[in-house]
Amino acid sequence: MLLTISHTTTYRYETPVHYALQQLRMTPCDNVQQRVLDWKVDVAGGGLEVSYKDHHGNHVDLVNLDRDATEVTITAAGRVETTDTAGILGNATCPLPLWYFRQQTELTEPGDGIRALADELGQAQEKLDALHALSEQIRSKVEYGTGETYAATAAEQALSGGRGVCQDHAQIFVSAARAAGIPARYVSGYMMMNDRIDQEASHAWAEAWLDLLGWVGFDISNGYSPDERYVRIAIGRDYRDAAPVSGLRQGTGDESMIVSLQIQQ
Image 1: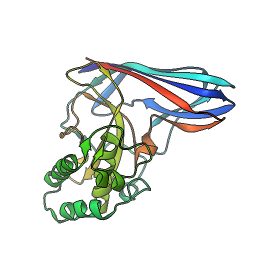
Image 2: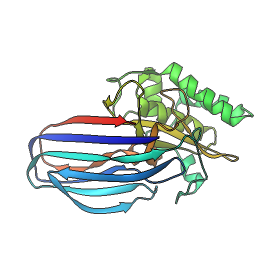
Image 3: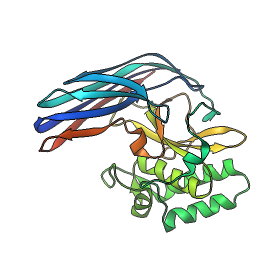
């Protein structure tokens, strides 16, 4: 499938920003599930300092905002050819060892609720079926809905609250898998919806390692494995590692954000 994507994010600042550096993880890379035909990231209100691969293998653009800027617009756009592999990424090249993805983080540290999910997974003989069952349990326990969680919400907190978004679903899954001894990682990217072109936000899912299959994807929010409608952008141990935009700024005042995202075949 050939997907065309245009993702524009505009930040507006209440007062001028004296200095800001932003890391952009908004560029996909080739793998067995996708081939990038063309892709470009433009920044209005700032300049590209350098591009590099981070320790997870993600493409990162480091952007310096113009001094005293009150608005910056970041546009990532291009075309990606995708293939349905039933969610199986396999033994894809990653610079980090498997034990790294067994380590919990501040956002994925399990509590009693996630440990209960992990106990069932740990006792299962057939791990692939058990991981799909875990995905279904999380989806039934945490209703999809915005406004209840935010970027710093931890997995256990989202589970106990019973409501969250794809970021929360993915982090709960990752936390439970690791607690059961299975390497797991967070994935950010895009998903083409069948009933619309315009979307409100990018997407997130999880991947777990199985010895006979390698890395396998699980879209907990939708209840199935990623197919040809998905484009992977970045991976990490949690949301913070794979966030589309992160960084620092000097200046006072509030910040507002407007997102425009279009994905179509």
